[in-house]
Image (cartoon, rainbow, N blue to C red; front, top):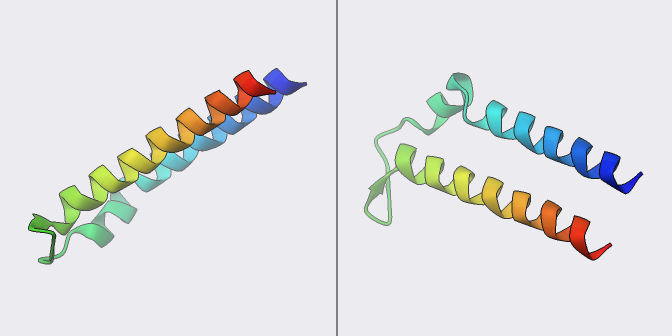
Length: 66
């Protein structure tokens, strides 16, 4: 049962990543605004990428401890 839940969470995380890194949502970040000296699009990409990696690590670590 636990392995099935982990698989479902990883699939959901993958689909979320695909959705957030797809064109329609990326177009929202394509503005002439700078955050901490970075244009908004690369800043948003790195932010989403980092959140996805952190979520992946959390799901995998949670699987090991329970």
